[in-house]
Image 1 (spheres, helix red, strand yellow):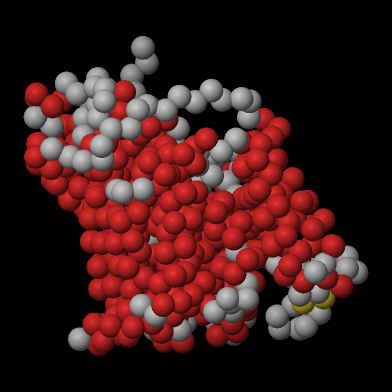
Image 2: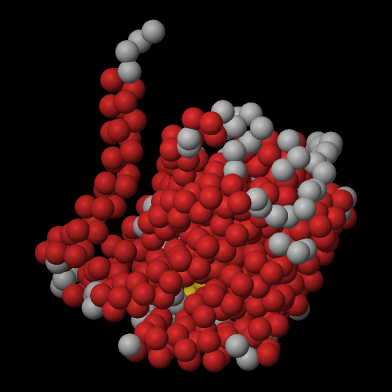
Amino acid sequence: MDIWNQLLQGFATAGTPVNLVWAFVGCALGTAVGVLPGIGPATAVAMLLPITAKVDATASMIFFAGIYYGAMYGGSTTSILLNTPGETASMVTAMEGNKMAKSGRAGAALATAAIGSFVAGTIATILVTLFAPVVAEFAVKLGPPEYFMLMLLAFTTVSAVLGQSTVRGLTALFVGLAAGLVGLDQITGQARYTGGVPELMDGIEIVLVAVGLFAVAEALHAVLFEGRVVESANKLSRVSMTASDWRRSIPAWLRGTAIGAPFGCIPAGGTEIPTFLSYATEKKLAKPAHQAEFGGKGAIEGVAGPEAANNATVTAALIPLLTLGIPTSNTTAILLGAFQNYGIQPGPQLFTTSAALVWALIASLYIGNVMLLVLNLPLVGMWVKLLKVPKPQLYAGILIFATVGAYGMRQSAFDLFLLYGIGVLGLIMRRFNFPTAPVVVGMILGPLAEAQLRNAISIGEGSAMVFLQRPMALTLLVVVVAVVVVPKVLKHWNRSATPLA
């Protein structure tokens, strides 16, 4: 019953006029950003991080949650109408949604995507409400050895899962860990790797890193490497569904939610796997008469299921972020930076130290879900007009936002040089397929992991055996090894089991 009381208090906080305005603005901006091809939620949150630096922490988190949710909703519009996914999560939606649009059923595709997102998001938010406090209550009993292993698990999963190559992922992680060492040592107070630059005494601002790696690098990559793309939008029909569409969509929404939610909860999550799994499931379970529509004129189940799986995964990903401090995507890594920017560290203690903020954030997810449904169905026509914004003006605006926001934090010219230096690094990483999220995670969690490692070694009286003597620490160590080794073993086994042609 305590959970419901806290949730009601969260609604009371999130339901204040100011916070409702922040939620609405976040949802609207997020949807608009999601509609624009190539500009994902990670870029949007990173770009807007500096602007909310002076805003109340609760309002800021509600705002970012709105962007986070809204960008996932908006991504389906450009996927269906243009066959141009704004995010990798929308790739599967584009497969059937664009075919439906070409056969004159764009309205039904957009409607099932919006309503499916609402259903899956609501169910997954209920899961966050019920299970996040339970996970936090268990995790708060852990000591320094377990915390260090938990952070090692975060490093490993983010590095191994978010990139195409484990080596590239680990390289990006070590770049982040190195950047996290710059500044004053937490224990001795000695300056490390500052090069005599006074601005680096407090370390490198996580906001600069996030904005540089995502927003600036995105704009530079578009200018330097992306040619002119001729885009043709399909005619938009009325956003509605027939009785047959409803009958086919409802089971797909529920199955997509059931597939997506577990992937959001586990540290090795991500939206690509559950959306593809959902698509394969719907194709297999479709009636013979409907199976012919897959890959042809477009099957509505192929839009409803993956879109629900995507939003269930995105929402459930807040469980490991809030309770364990483990981000499972680029966007949650940036949200982790947003929390730290306010001196708040997601993890087991968060539900104790910042209970009001957490429950207001969870309550805002319910409110945002309703807002997004209201925004998506009637205003799809308006969002489609955003697709006409020319790319040069779009990316110029991103660079202006990034520059003004970075300079506004400390009014330091050095920060601008650092911002664009990090942007060039992000450009190089993107060009050579190095994932950027591990850099952010390494910067944020690196100093914390260092402190926990020192404390753990002190508990073990100088011996690293303390990690093997405590059952939970040992279990986490086994999981870390499994995350790195098992995929390699399975890949090798599948290769050797495949007969040569």
